[in-house]
Each structure stands twice: as structure tokens, then as C-alpha cells.
Image (cartoon, rainbow, N blue to C red; front, side):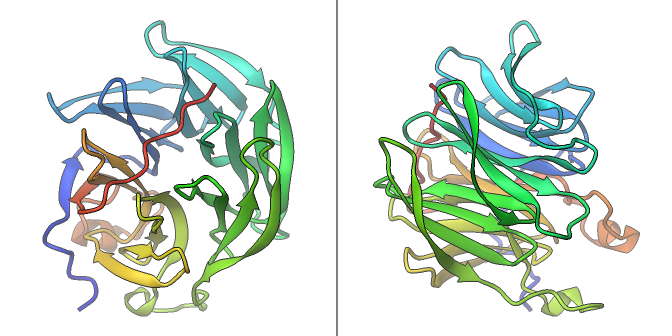
Length: 302
């Protein structure tokens, strides 16, 4: 059966999040950072020593990215912030470009040039009013829109293709990306998946594309939310590997470890049926998987 988990999938962090997201391997610290959005937490896990620490906030923490000065960029419901993990202090970089009552930041990453890209989620879900923004030169600029749940940001190894998904639409897009300017062009469908039908049995549902990461061969690894699987898509958008997981709702993979050959996969348990949580006690935990092809290192905010 498809829902028998791949035996190579292990548990990296057994302490569950409500909705784990935005895993990021910090190259200097050799540690894993990730967010718990509704849990209002930024987490740091040290695989070498096993220590798990967290910082708590009073609002949703959507995503994180490392900065050159050692701080962290945090996209939160109430704006974009620079966070000093030593002092526990945050400094606002930008006000939210939306109404926080109905929208919040979601998936975000830096491009290879150090610009921070972050999308939003429009929580009423209809119409598709979410958008994608880029912080460049101290300004937050709207770069793309027409989606409901912005997700799946990643760049090809040569930095000339950017990926972006709309989870609700079950679609991953690709853009031509101009590295010097950050300009986007030629938006096209990279991969699309069958829509979830009303009252559909989840055992026959493939899931919808959530967070993603790219490896050195240019393949796009995407977490299929509610599909209980992780897919590796070729640069042509074809599925070349499926990894079955022990939880219904994977949210995002990232590459980590000294050789960048460990996939860390965040997952969720928020608002899941009680029976599902009994059957899947690892929901919300961080999973891991060793792979043969290394991933691209995290990009750092300049």
C-alpha cells in the first residue's frame, strides 16, 4: 500500500509542532532551524548533541532565513523582522503589506543574491488574493499574485529558474529568473496535481504541493500535504521518486547535515482528525531521510 512508510525515513525531532514549517540548515551553526506557525515558535535543533531550544512570540511565525550578520530574518503575521537569537530581540524591517485579519506571510527564502522572497496566504481561501513579495534594497516589492496559498519557493542550481507554488491550486510554477535584478518572466506550469474532491477518501488522494527544496542535480523535492508523501521531480517536472511517509501532512523538506545529504521534513498535526493522530503519532514531528544527491545550501540574506 502507498501509505506504508519508506523504511529509511527516521525521526529527527520527536517533539511535535502544531504546524512545523520552513526548515533551514544553518551552515555556520550546523543546526536545524524551523518554525511552528500557530505555535508561535522558532525552533533550533542540534543533531550532534540532540538539544532542542525554542523562542516564543505572540504571533504566527511563518518562515525564517539566516542573515550575514548572524541574525535571523523572520516573516511573521505582523511583518518582517530581524531577530537576534542571542539577545532574544527582534527589530522590524517592514510592515505587513496586507490586512493581518485575513492574510499572513507563509513560505519564504532568500535567492542566491541574498534578496528575501516571501509569499502570503489569503485565509478566506477565495478569491485568490495572496501574493509574492521580495525585499530588495530595504524595500518590500510585490512580484507576483493570483494565488491563494503561496508556497514552494526554490531556485535551480544555476539560479536562472525560480519555482513557486499555489498549494490550493495544486500547481507548481516556474519562472525565468534574472539573477542581477531579480526580475521574473515567462511564468509557466512546472507540475500540476489532481485536485482534491469533496469528501474524497484520503487514501486515494495524492496531496497538494507545499514547501520544497532543490538538489545539486536540479531536482525539485516537494512535500505533498495530506498526500503522506514526498516527491522528487526532475527539471522537466516529471516524478522520478516517491518517498512514502508515516504522517498525513508533510509540509516542507530541506537539505542538511555536513554533506547536505540529509533531508529534514517538517510535518503538521493542527486540526487533524483524532483518529488520524492516534494512528499517526509522529504527526508534527521532524522526519529525516538520507539521500544520494546533495542539496543546495541555504541562501543567506545580505
